[in-house]
Amino acid sequence: MSENKVILGSEEWCTFPELGIPTIKARVDSGAKTSALHAVNIAPFIKDDTNWVKFDINPIQNNNKTVIHCEAPLVDKRIVKSSSGFREQRYVIQTMLEIGDSKWPIEMTLTNRDSMGFRMLLGREAMSGRVLVDPEKKYLIGEPNPETLKDLYKNAEKASTGLRIGVLASNPELYSNKRIMEAGEMRGHEMHFLNIKECYMKLDAQTPEIHYRGGIILNQFDAIIPRIRPSITFYGCALTRQFEALKVYSLNSANAITQSRDKLFSLQLLLNSGIGIPTTGFANSPLDTNDLIKMVGGSPLIVKLLEGTQGKGVVLAETKKAAESVINAFKSVNANILVQEFIKEANGKDLRLFVIDGKVVATIQREAMPGEFRANIHLGGTASIIKATPEEKKIAIKAAKAMDLKVAGVDIIRSSKGPLLLEVNSSPGLEGIEGATNKDIAGEMIKAIEKNFKIR
Image (cartoon, rainbow, N blue to C red; front, side):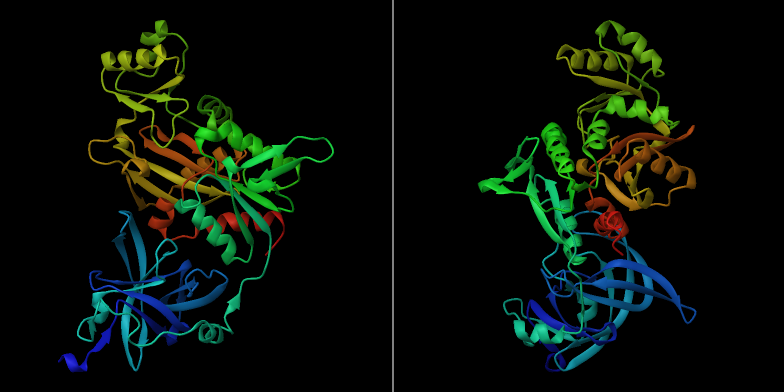
């Protein structure tokens, strides 16, 4: 009967006493099947011979300094397709929900909701038989004021103040940049977004400086995290070098970024370190086309622009005639290209191993859309969790070291000859790998900076 049901608006505040969460704002969404709770640093463990999971939560939206450490019985692990289209494996917990004077147990998945507007989503499975929703109303059960919130969370852990860190990038709304900013703030650091195009520098032996829009002098930074688009590599690395000259620690050095962006040079560095790659050819004259094609085993083959990124400027030539046409077309506009053998058995899949400070922190498998051979997420590819082999991890760590990168996205393809390295990315995106693995990769990047400053 409806008179026995709780009437909720489209947004409500609720409590999770078993998790130690006194109140949290939820989006009430009958269109969503399952409920979801924001969580980072998710880790399963055994307690009293049963499976549990522990995680951290910032329960107040836009406040990453208040941290609640939670643990709950682990009910299940499920593959969920997020609203952005990524498939991710989520841990499922069961805990008691309190809304107003009512309480009942619900199941929730744990996922990073930093890019969402609410720390919690209340889905229809948790509401079935107990709730009616009036979508035109909000906070029918009540809403805490700022002072009440402050009092409720007075005993919550506060992240201590720490370093002054700049994110040197172009787009503050990009998922990766937002996550890095939020991860730094959550760990108690003073984070600043520095738009590359709005920075300029003073070259001087006595007083070198970096200025920002309005003439602000950028000084007293402890560290920077360069996230430089390929199109502005030259200027972005010039700024990074200037910060380095001012004794500011850079998570990836300008020199490492520069050489990683030179596809030919980076492949030569990797080969010199004994890392296997698909057979690759490079030439400067269209007269060499036939031998170039033969060199990499004939068609089908891959033609890559040296300046390409995110799968752009990469063409599959399925026949010798098509390969000749593509190569000669690129050569006619004086474009530098690589010709590379096509690994057919990979079947449109590759691995992205995320290396931070000499350790593989996460691995995903990227799979191309039907009819597409490029597995890049930006081109519609999907990401899923996969376990890298010890050999693949060794290659990824070795590749990052060869390129002198503290943070690297290492792309590996599985072939009949074993794992082969495709590319090393100095500014790897976080959305696909965080969405698929539920791991706080941005937080691991901040920890790498803390390690340099011996902060525990």
